[in-house]
Image (cartoon, rainbow over the protein chains, first blue to last red):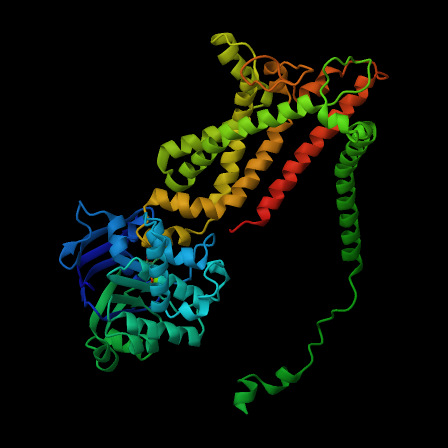
Length: 258
Length: 306
Ligand SMILES: Nc1ncnc2c1ncn2[C@@H]1O[C@H](COP(=O)(O)OP(=O)(O)OP(=O)(O)O)[C@@H](O)[C@H]1O
Ligand SMILES: [Mg+2]
């Protein structure tokens, strides 16, 4: 059920400001693709176009094509709400719903879309929490508020919430940047397990993390502030980290960035 | 060595900061401080003394009546200004009923308007709506009363009734509810909306299932404070809600008592008459009622999730 994503000639705008220009790439199914690059080069922006979250921002608009298994996400008759059910997302800061219990947080995607069957919901909650490696820590307090968990637990709760609706692609925007090393490792292990079933795209500022978890790495860069960001190169992670084609990539990875 | 001193000359690192003296205050600064403190305390006293004085007067003059249980069980039916006794239950009921109905009309309109302004409103129409709410905020209560009078009594020929009081109070309450709800909705982090969108939840569902519940207790606080404000209104009641001494609960016909109109009723009686005490007691009851609403509002605010 994991799907491949093909992006071609994508330009992304915030109002009249062109934030990203001319991105073309292929994201492999059942693999982890990491986006790396300096701050402000448009990694989050590109990520958010992959499930049509970009247009939620006033003035946000896109030119170009994003194909999910050959189907254009930006075709006229495509419903963005449906796209987001297929392509899930985990955010930089854990954002559980503060009014909901742990159980309801995980079930939120199904419940808010009209699933009422309690047995089915309970089953999905357990499966998703197990999938997110959180079940053992919370199984006795499913009816406590989700906001009462630690930051790392909240982030895994958000991952559980995202996989509960069984998306085919999972986008993660710096999912570990607010977490301690142990929670980070837990989430990296989780990513490794999840990639058997999902296509995963992860944005990270942590080179070691990109090297550890990803199969492919995409390096983004921007020429100067105010200029649109660009995809410099996308290749297998070992190639990018050991023998990149572009000089800019090598400079960035070796820390000699100017 | 350089690693320890970090490149700084050694003597500069080790020298005492001699020119920095933290002991004592300079004289003029201390003086300014005491003057400013005195002025602030004086301003505070000027603001608070009348308030305390009013509360004390009302409590002293009306307190003994509201401590009597008949105050809360009897109406004024059959009691003249010269006779003691009777209660205010007719007026309390009227105020509560009219407040409740006013809230029932204002809250949905006000909350939905705020939802529109915060979640959907873009461009010119939203600006016009927002501007209208500003204008409504500034409408004096007597104008709201006269407006409803002009429309329903003069133009459509209805007779005065409780429901028209509610409509005029609605005009006063809607802007309060809109503004306070708007503030609460703006406090709900965008990340929560995005989290719901990313699960494939449509926008309207996100608003009703995530945004409004998150802001719920704050909205309740705003509603209760708005209600506290309109329940003490008098002008529209004088115009649209004729007083009666009997218990009356029909909003659509006949007279109906409220605490403000009860206070107004006997106010020109000689100060020695028992009715005079009842004015103070009714005023005290109204103050307590509104205080209670305010406290409930603050309490609801404690449970805020944003
Ligand atoms: N909501 C927005 N409105 C306008 N411009 C935006 C908005 N969000 C981002 N941008 C601009 O788009 C460009 C790319 O931003 P983006 O957030 O995608 O960068 P990033 O690579 O994710 O950076 P970081 O590593 O700091 O997260 C930046 O120039 C940024 O200023
Ligand atoms: Mg980012």
